[in-house]
Length: 115
Image (cartoon, rainbow, N blue to C red):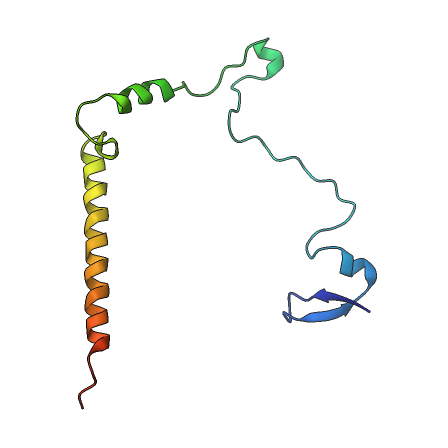
């Protein structure tokens, strides 16, 4: 006897051998399509561009490395100015608030019930 997981009843049910060996939702004999390339998609077809391929954006990594590696006394996580400071302070406020909330909840839970 062969078994297969039923998506409707959420239980194992009896099944034919061919249904038991093929995963649910996949059909045998259908060719798999190759996924489209997401990163580094060229702006021109290779036949149009010749031997070189131009990409959509410029490489910003060297500029960002120079920017973040300058020693100006500012920590790396605050280098980009006001948005970084706002994000950092919000994160710290939520962290401190969460710790205070947990401590208060722990204190209240430790108190004996008075009726």
